[in-house]
Image (cartoon, rainbow, N blue to C red):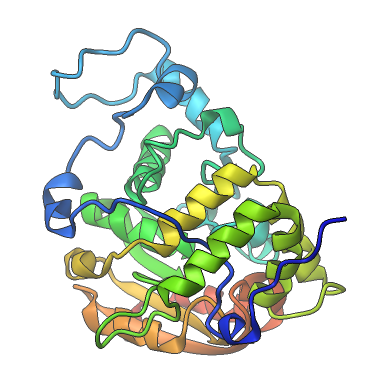
Length: 343
């Protein structure tokens, strides 16, 4: 019988429950040149054949920028389970974090649809997406997810939007806004972090040993890891509806994909590009978050390149929109409706 794998309590306090393992990072000095690449180019075969392209691939040598043909647009919506709700003029895009899917916004969406056009979608690799579409090369960094976001906006002919990104999608939104700032009126970053590892004069919340143990737990027994991780990250016991909901979406991920995504997220370091993000950013943070210490939100506020504001909410856990909707939904609505100067 399998046993429940929970890290030692000293590691739990640091949030040793997500990722680890060897990972080659793209030198951050190359990011400014890397970001302007055509966001609709597919770098590997699985998505090129199954998700985006219906014809033959062009030779690698050709770099001419070209929009996705209209005949391919439907496959993008299908692959990411894109839904467009409401009928307002202003577009709101809601993007979920690791281990969840678009259902994590179920408490927020009903408050938006009468006033806004709401776009929800699933990041590739979520349990609701086809695992055959997950290309490990394309998603070897957060840029692949940012390009997916830009492709969805192109598909839906969105000219401007308010982007709400939770957890890893906060940084995905930052990357996308650097590439195409004109598409984003503002970013609302909920529980986002540019780096999870501690560094000199930087507190991200994790040591490498914590992450290595986390990755090992995922590899050893994914089901048991999910059972132990869900209540820790949500901030509740297994009887909690929010914990049960997160457990369900987390367990729906294919284990090898979950490990890869976790490694990419927790070994990433987006600090050096923050100054390039000039779109106004609203940074929202729980008072207690196992994955993202409050100090990280303050760091974001100090290093983003445009206007920014931080609000620390009296909520507990990394998924406060799911676990504390009565507290968090009014805050989200206020930041969606009001600009920084009018908070």
